[in-house]
Image 1 (spheres, rainbow, N blue to C red):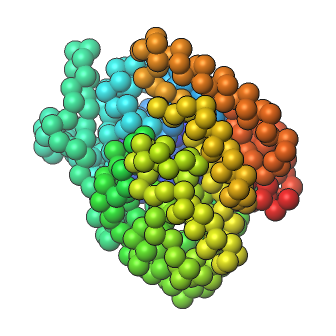
Image 2 (cartoon, rainbow, N blue to C red):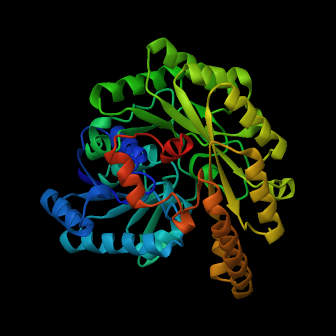
Length: 441
């Protein structure tokens, strides 16, 4: 089959992101299929680009990767969904080929997005195996469609859900994501890559979609395979000068994180990198090993400065653990960027104020402050009014505080978070997460 793969993500804030999920699916696609790829991230006229690409290829199947539902400023979902709907319609104008949706954003709202976009199929969860099984079935040599785990289908205008989840990939044998499929503009303009050392997350944060997308059990990649992937990146993309570990949390389990660090040191991988870290089990020996392996900083989902809110969000740690992580990181020379979600369900304005006081006390290298977007408010008028009132008062507080704290990032107020700022950083040659440069001020 001739397959047109399209990465639909156009988010540039804070930086464009390599579509590692789609690259993994393309790389795992059975080799007898003819593969073509388009990344819409840098296209000025994405719909026209998609029409040209699909029209020129005349594919038998179009695979459309939806990375995000929310924008990175936590605005509502309507903007992205409208763009995806327009993209599907543009493809339909030049091709009658079936359209398959997939990606992390699709998985979060699998049935809803398949209905809204009126595509033909949707792969929820890890896509490598489910997509290959779909191809085999469409070629007539595989199992029936209703037996494929993770596969949603539209039949006669209605969506049929799978009877089983997508099968999980064996990370010890899965092919490396081949970076030759990556649009070179990611490397020329940004120079940052994404790498996984594991999939799945054992934590139970109330709002998080990682377990839905990857499962609740951590499946570990052999550290040597992680090093192999970084050597591959170094060979095919010498422009890369920073990588981000996109695991839900890098430091859990700790023994695996330390083994990955050892593998990077043993291979002489000297690229600087950053990662997500959880305060639950962050110890000096790991921090020191990370620094030795080239880690320059970490992003921490601290979320709140009050223990009651942390408990309600099922974070699995308290404010003392956040303080302890900050001390350990600084002792090892690692910068720490903490993200806080303000106005979560059940939270009061006093809770918000206590969190702001906590951030001042913590004094991290950088802090990213988001205002919670309550999706249930879209169908509950009373909840919508309460949420809007709290959001308005929260934003007023943030507006009053922002100029006194130069290392705070407040996306809803475009404070240290704008396309103009990030473009200027890229033009100046500064690579890696934008908060690292803010932290250096």
